[in-house]
Image 1 (cartoon, rainbow, N blue to C red):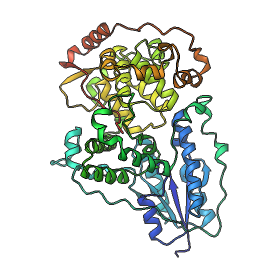
Image 2: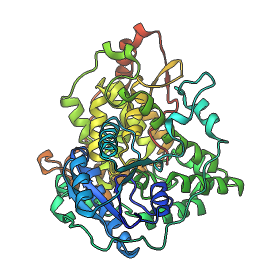
Image 3: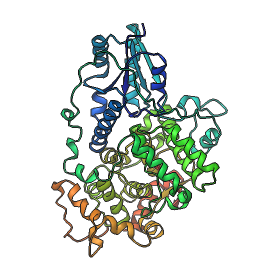
Image 4: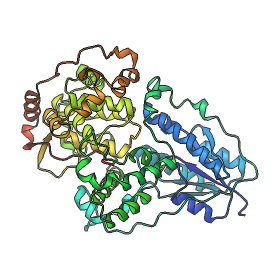
Length: 483
């Protein structure tokens, strides 16, 4: 009976534009009941991504109302919540978009198996990636371990055209009850930082599409060269929206490809960064241990330092290295961090401070509004040296030479470090309003001296790696996400 509704289980796909799950659901002709479940996996998000998710849910709920629908909110374990909704609504089944991190895969596989055992429709669909991880294989049938061959394999691969959002969604005759988003208090852990970061986020489907268009109308032309300079507005900012599925990768791919065909000089490099995101998911799917363990097992014996005073000064943006501190402070003020900054702070923590990459990974997970499980894990492991890297050397970034190369005029440093300016700007001062009061930081304090001598820190890292037969190379490229 096509009168029985379908439940659409939304997670990190908060859009109506180009959503394969929605296209398939509409094709059934059934009424649709959009649902968001606040389960343990979602509750486990860090402070900033959970707060940003709450904003995204609110914007998506309003988007659905405009399309003649609504978003039903329920809290609890996914399976019993969905089963209860099926019982309440007489739904024929559930559809959702796939996620690929280990916790989500385990949950989704259990939900699918149990619903199907009950005779219900249970379908997962693509939508978070351009290519499902198991569909891209090497010539010998395995998965790719190196980015460049992966890029060559998918560059010319067909990508289905993006499907426009429907004008309206078919609604059920009776809607099930919904919890109140405010009662979930998704932003509670952000405390006073929420008001600061809120000035810099762009939430929802329409702002995401506008962000893409703005980028393609201008910055993409200089993207390849300018994206490494943190004081230049050269990036798209779409990592924030991609993280919550407020824009689909197919929409970005085709728009970027069209820009490349029109002659936009940086468009292909932009597409490469989108595929870098794909590659991180490819690796996470095939080697899920990348999120928690050294991707290269031989690094398990490396004497990483644990958490302590050094890591705490790094967290607080008080290392005495201006590039490192500016990047950390940018994260507290804006919720994001320039890609060049991510490289520098990760290298500094893992090389000059010899601190376990998982400490940095966890801190990014708590503080970034564009946190992505695959990109974050791969970026930290790549920076640490324990991850998937084909280069025959050990990368060590020198924050001093990097800052002179990419922030020679000190615009980025002064933008976020109040102690370096006679008249500090609003964003530099906002840092002190965003961070926890318990840190006791003030713009009146003196900027700290460097924690370690950079040359000595470099030599200490090299000595620790000497028995691995690796050569060091300073400033070689490494990426978290360049979008």
